[in-house]
Length: 74
Ligand code: SF4
Ligand code: SF4
Image (tube, rainbow, N blue to C red):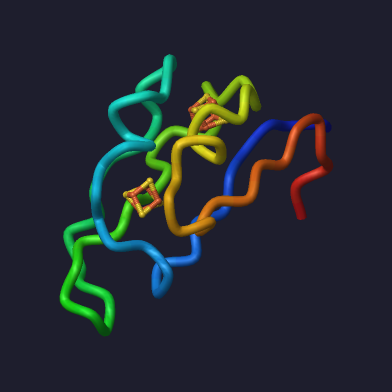
């Protein structure tokens, strides 16, 4: 089954929240845990509703997000 989803490099993320604010489907949020820099990284809490639009990828100033569109999730 093909799916849309994103992977977020938690160590690159500085918790700015831009991806969370711009996601049209509101499927991103802050993780409760901290990365090694002391930030709450973004996470995708609802991949089933991701449309693979790439807005999060385009907004991220730290290139921490990779978007997978119509990809077989393993
Ligand atoms: S690809 Fe689009 S829908 Fe999916 S998490 Fe990113 S901004 Fe949200
Ligand atoms: S836009 Fe990038 S740096 Fe900012 S919270 Fe999202 S993943 Fe982290």
